[in-house]
Structures are given as structure tokens and as C-alpha cells.
Amino acid sequence: AGRSRPGIVGFREHIFSAVGSLGALAAEGEFVFGTVTQRMLAQILGCRMHYGHPDIMDKLQMMTQGGISKATRGLNLSEDIFAGMDLTLRGGEIKYTEYHHVGKGRDMGFMSILSFFGKLAAGTAEQSITRQSFRLGRGLSM
Image (cartoon, rainbow, N blue to C red):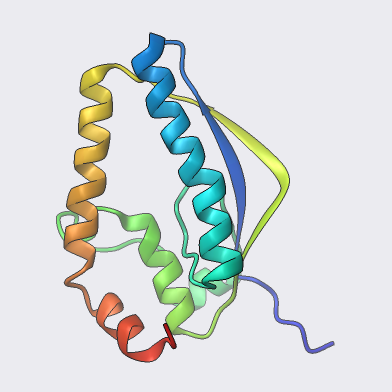
């Protein structure tokens, strides 16, 4: 009694690639983000949001906050993190666990890696000017 049900449960993931040393290096970089960085965000800083695959969402909580889709493709380029931001702003809880490990194969050629990191950079820049970021910055203790 008294424990809230998490709206998002995140799991660790292992990215793998068979495209040589460049693919292996990029896959290991994503592995670090998917494990070490997620642990730090969740357990130490208490500010882990939603980063897509392989997180599981509580459909009922997501529906009551208007769903997870965003209308503006350019502004909401990294659309998955907005689900976590909206859930946090509405008082929801996000958990990260490591009892489930998900593997994901990815094409890791040079152009694939370049476009992926370009999307991450553009999404981060765009999310920094959103209302959600402003409200989180004003309302959270960090």
C-alpha cells in the first residue's frame, strides 16, 4: 500500500553490429548509454526519462496524459523523451531495472552512425527550447 505504479519501466539493452571495428565502437558507445548512463540517471540523479526501445509503458497512464505522440515533427524530433517528460510533469514515476536484458541489432556503417548522431544532436537542441524542458527546469530540485 502507498507505492505508486510506474508509468514507464526501462530495461537495459545491448546493441550489436557485424560491420567491423567502426560498428563495434559505435555499438559499445550505445551500450554505455544504455547501461551505465541509464543507471546514473535513474539511481543517482533520479531524472531518467524515456529513451525508446526497450522501455515498457503503462497504457492507462499514457492515455490520461494525452498519449505519447507529438504534433510537430521538427520540434519533437526525439519524440520518445517527451513521454517521460510529460509523465514526470504530471507526477508519474519512471523506474529502471536490469532484470531484463534486450538485444538490438543495428546497421553501423559510417553514414548510419553519422545520421544517428546527427538526429541525437538535433533532437537535443530542439528539446531544449520546449515548454516541457522549461517546466522541468523550474520545477525539479536539480
